[in-house]
Image (cartoon, rainbow, N blue to C red; front, side, top):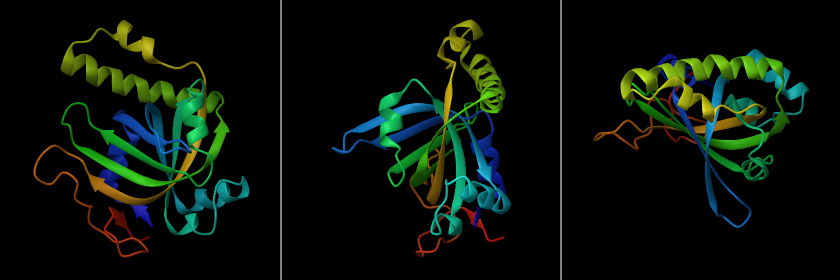
Length: 185
């Protein structure tokens, strides 16, 4: 299973990424994501070799999410097996989707992740600067200096674009028969 082309383009672009988690006492926490990549089927096999995937995760879409390494509370909430929701919104159009799934664990990020975050932040900040007029130097204060990587097995995808269709499952079907935005490979 893979996300459809439109959803993939949205989540991988410089969209606003908000990540929702809960701790072991079910207290919610939200943070900003700093880049997201949808992993192709071949890459999922590579991740399995690094201990990021389970047999069940191989049947669902897997995404690679970048988070601020200094947010220890969120990292604690994202131990393998914990629920996670990622909302991606296009700053210019407000087109939004929410990916729901399960964390496959947290690993340290390195130079490639920092470069990916820089590309993401450049697109994200440019959209905010153009639409809201917020000066770039203020936005850049948000940028983390270290990252962690969280792989997430996505099991559900919802439209979150403001309007009457907000909250509906996107076309396609996952293994449980629920609706999700997917193209079968």
